[in-house]
Structures are given as C-alpha cells and as structure tokens.
Length: 200
Ligand SMILES: O=C(O)c1ccccc1NCC(=O)[C@H](O)[C@H](O)COP(=O)(O)O
Image (cartoon, rainbow, N blue to C red):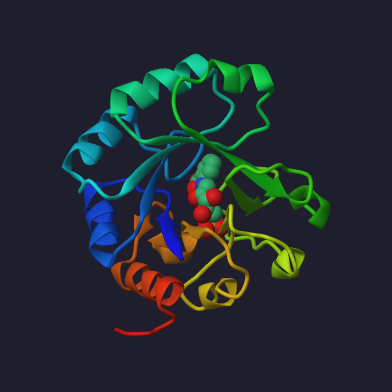
C-alpha cells in the first residue's frame, strides 16, 4: 500500500516521513489551515527532498492560474484539488492533478469514473479533521484507483488493507499538535500501512 503524509509544514517533518518510507508528501496552501505553508517554504523543502517521493500541493478555492503558478514555482509533482472545481478549471491546468472527493454518503464514491481520486470524509470546513469515511462503502468494488483519507491512524490503518486501495493519506493521525508531525506515529503508520507490523 502506498502512503502519503499530508500537512507537511517544515523540513524536519518531511525528512522524518521520507526516512520512514513514505511514497508522497502533501503541502497545504489553504491559509485558514493550521498546516498552511507558503509557496516559498514548499520550494525550499522540495529542493532538499529525495527523488523517489512524490510532492503534492493542496489547493482550496483558488483560480487555475494560481495553481499553475505555484506548481511551476515550487517544482512539485502534482496538484491536489480539494474543492468542486468545474471542467473549465481543469482544462486550464497545465500540471498533473488529483481530485479529492469529500464523501458524505456511499453514493458519493459510486459516481466517479475511471480516474485516481482521494476519498476523504466530508466536513463543512476543509481538511485534516480526523473524520473517517465508512469502510463498508468500499466493500465488493474495485478500489485500486482510490487513495483513502480521513481519520486514519497507526492503530486503524491496518483495516484499510483489506479493501485493495491504491494508497492511504494521513495528516492529523500522525501529528503531536496541528501542523507538527510525531516521528513515532509517522513510523508506525508507515509500518502498519505497508507491512502490517508494529514496532517502536
Ligand atoms: O490539513 C488541512 O488542514 C487541510 C486544509 C485544507 C484542505 C485539505 C487539508 N488537508 C487534507 C488532508 O490532509 C488529507 O485529505 C488528509 O489525509 C485527511 O486528513 P486527516 O483526517 O487529518 O488524516
């Protein structure tokens, strides 16, 4: 299972995550978030990171031109789009992107087509809430293009292993306080998600 750690606000947390074996990191550009980080800082962190880790930048309610500008400036790999943008918005993007479904009910995960998506729990305010998506919604279907997010922790991520997800995405579940990752939780999360083992 691939693992993405979201809400990286500093180099130390990025390094801890890379050393633990993550596949991807996420940086939040939404300025109301406790995990907000400026594009200048994202760029500096990305410059120091190893090559085989995907760098995602998260956007909420922004213009497509802004997404293109930040992606080009930071040299990140993929834009994560957290709001209900229309077709015109996506046509204007000149970078790779990943849409996020904020699922309220089972039918929200049934309607999308054959594209990779993050499925996170719906909360009226955006992101990093620790709220879970009901795992039973994913029973008996092909989940190989879904990245599961929302309320995952080192203790519960093992359960997600039974549904064949492409990957998992975590933020608050591996923090000591909002915006700061906990090294032990990050390590345990990666170990439990990838290998189902507990150490440390
Ligand atoms: O983390 C935020 O504050 C945030 C703000 C605005 C948009 C998205 C945001 N976070 C998204 C995520 O970090 C992920 O979808 C995440 O893995 C789910 O969060 P959590 O339930 O805390 O693991």
